[in-house]
Amino acid sequence: MWVFVITAVLIFHYLARFVTHPVNQLIEGTRLIASGGYFNPQVIQRHDEMGRLAEAISTMGQEISRQQKALVQANEELLQANDELGRMASTDPLTGLFNRRYLLEILTKEYQRARRYQHELSLLMLDVDHFKQVNDTYGHICGDMVLRGIAALLKKTVRNTDLVARYGGEEMVVLLLETGGKEAVAIAEKLRGAIATRPMACNDLEIAVTVSIGVATWPAQGQEGYMDLLDAADQALYKAKESGRNRVVAS
Image (tube, rainbow, N blue to C red; front, side):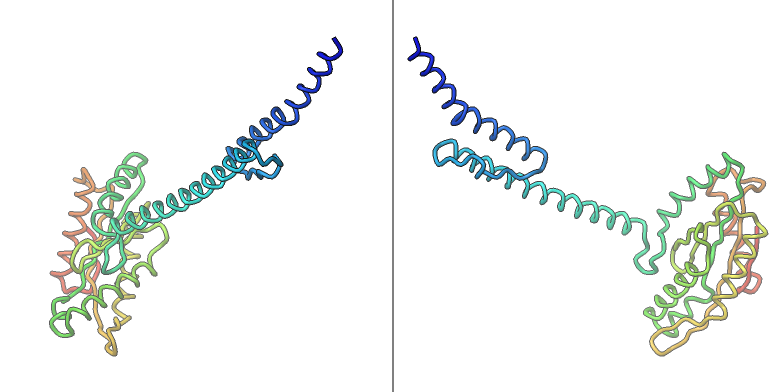
């Protein structure tokens, strides 16, 4: 009887020391790996199958950790690439201003918001006076530098809440949020004066240019959508050109 009891006790201690305890350590090791931790196989202190299993689990954990880090880095690079694609899709490559597509996207939203909450909204349309003469006289490279210089001056001069975009060719647009007609004209005059008094650099040359600006504001009679606001600013710009250029005309 005692022989069986002693044998059972010895078997129990053997199993606890050489099977149950190592298995529990392996289970704890897998939990460490699952939570991003490191499992040290040396805690098993075995050189048999159990020890090799611990080594395999540790190696698997290190590989999982390496792949997780690689995945995180790949995701960060993908996010950066997506941000860059988004920036390129909304930016004019020559001037660095927003492009026409992005302008129309924002204008649509802001026009709807202005109508919903009865906020004023103004738009300036600028055109470089006699720009063809600039290209013919100084060349297209200098013409491009003039456009870049005007774009930089516009971004520097307008408010943080304003949006500046290249509309096409030598035309640029400034969208003035929550701005009435009187204030919009004052801002347009400030921009016109800044450009007229600051020649644009091209290599060793300084090229004097002026701009004509048309101003339109919502609300106004006959405006039913954002295209009406653009059209009103375009018509005002045409009048500024017809009346001598280098001036501001409000619709």
